[in-house]
Length: 393
Ligand code: FNR
Image (cartoon, rainbow, N blue to C red):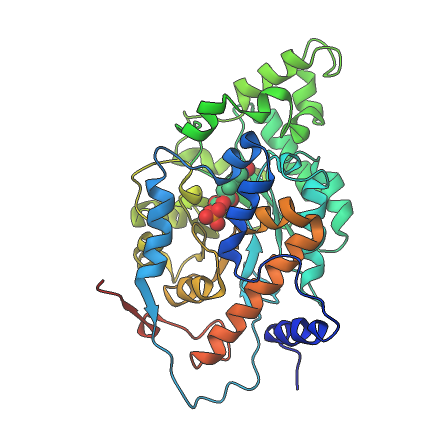
């Protein structure tokens, strides 16, 4: 019998014969509470917090929870393959780790640990790791840490064209194969948990590693970063994002990146159509985990309309609110090709470093594998809207 992700449960039960139990809960929804207890108020507020009163983050969960799976029987699910093709690459499972900046506030091993976990968790090929522009480790170091592991680069599109061009060139040279451009953060949103602590790591030069190591960025400084760190931080603040960008600007990215380009933060079907018209390769239906627009549509409610608009032209990926294997199943059934996982892996990192991230990936994929099988599917490509009902409650 082929090895299945679901076999992780037997590994856990067998280890239990010697008295060992998993170091972290296998119900991944419990990780947030544990992290809240272990980390300081600044970092935990930064990761668990959302925009406004948190209504979008709650809506993300509610929209997934409201949809219920209707399992089918007697469908021969003894052999299953979770592999899926995404952006021209064969992935071992419909999962990637979402770009999350500033991981050093969660754990000293930071992005290299998360990237290594992604590269290791799937035996053959690795779950893609999406590195944030705002990482606390330079992109080349993360690439080195993960060896051949599949990696994508997330761009916060800087105001300075030379820095943008330089980032893309560095990412390409360091083996990042796809570009995710995050469009939902032209400004930082109103985030009460961070505001109440007056906590913004970037102002302390944390989460700026790609900038401070960049030749084009440094060319704009009067003194080297170490001689005047405050000036470097201010230079970063001035160029981090650009609310003046509009759709025609996407041509710049096409000219400077020859691999797949995916727009992250798409919620409206018309924006998805504009992405397709602009020659993009995909979109991530996402509201940034509820961190940008309070009162926003839940990502899972936006997903079917985007799929209907561009599902035949673009690769549609999804994030925001995914916590469990059945959440992934629901996103697939709503038309996503694959899912990005955000906070849960960050909690895994905070609680147990690289091993914690591996634990999260393995639990999520084991639960997905079992949900597929127990619902009558042997592949992540076959669930569809007919596998779900909306809970009237
Ligand atoms: C993020 N996210 C994010 N997105 C991005 O494109 N670049 C980034 O640097 C960050 N940074 C970041 C930090 C933290 C602490 C969080 C929680 C999230 C958003 C992320 O990629 C993803 O869209 C959400 O995390 C998905 O929602 P869930 O899974 O966290 O609910």
